Image (cartoon, rainbow, N blue to C red; front, side, top):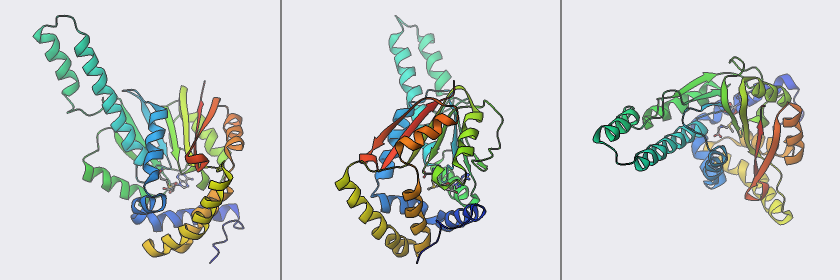
Length: 280
Ligand code: SAM
C-alpha cells in the first residue's frame, strides 16, 4: 500500500504528481469537503481576508487547480467595488440627479462584474484540473476577468513584473524544486506585489498534533478509497504534507527568494499556515 514517494527520484516526482491530480480531478472538490469537513473553505476565505484585494488588482493563482482562490478573489473584489461605490454615492453633498446617475451607470455597466482591469489567472500544470475548473466557472456564470493557463510553477509562462498578487494554495508542496517556484513568484510579481501561500504546516499544539496525525494517516487514505476508489493518491497527499517544511523553515525559504516582511499566520492550530511576503 506504500506509494513510495519518499524514495522516487526528482524526475519521477513530477510525473507521479501529474498522475495523482489527473486521477483526482473529477472528485477533487467533493474530496476537499469530505476530508477537511468543509474547513478548507474557511481557510481559503481567510486567505482572501488577509489579501484584502482592491478593484483593479491582478492575481496569478499558481497551482490553482479548479479555481477556488480565483473565484473568491473575483467575488471579494466585486464586493469591495460595490462598497466603494456606495460610499461615494453617500458622501456626495447635495447630489444632482446627474451625479448619481453617472456614478451608478459607470459601475453598473458590467452588471456588478469586477472592473475590466481586475483579473485572475488560474495557472496549473494539470489540464484535467483546469478543465474541471473551467466547467465550474461556466456553470456558475463566472467568466469575466478569469483565464486558465497551463503552466509549471517552476517555469511560469509569464513576463516579469506582471501581477499584484501571487497565490499558491495547497500547491507548493507538490512542486519538485520549491526554491525555483519561489524565484518565479518573485519574478512575475510587480515591485510592491505580494506573495501569499496557503499550505499545510506543522501543528503547534501536541494534543491536536496527535489527533491530527491519527486522522490523516488512518482516515485520509481510507476516505480516498471509499469515496474515490483511490488509496494511493490520498496516501501521497498525507506523505507530502508530512514532508513539507514547518512554518519557520518555509519562512526562511521565502526570504531566500528575495521577499521582504515575510510573516505567517497559523490557522486551526497550525494544521495550515498562510505565509505572506512582498517584492520591494
Ligand atoms: N489551489 C487549488 C485549491 O486550493 O483547491 C488546488 C490545489 S491541488 C491540492 C494542487 C494543485 O497543484 C494540482 O492542481 C496540481 O496539478 C498542481 N501542481 C502540481 N505541481 C505543479 C507545478 N509544478 N506547477 C503548477 N501546478 C502544479
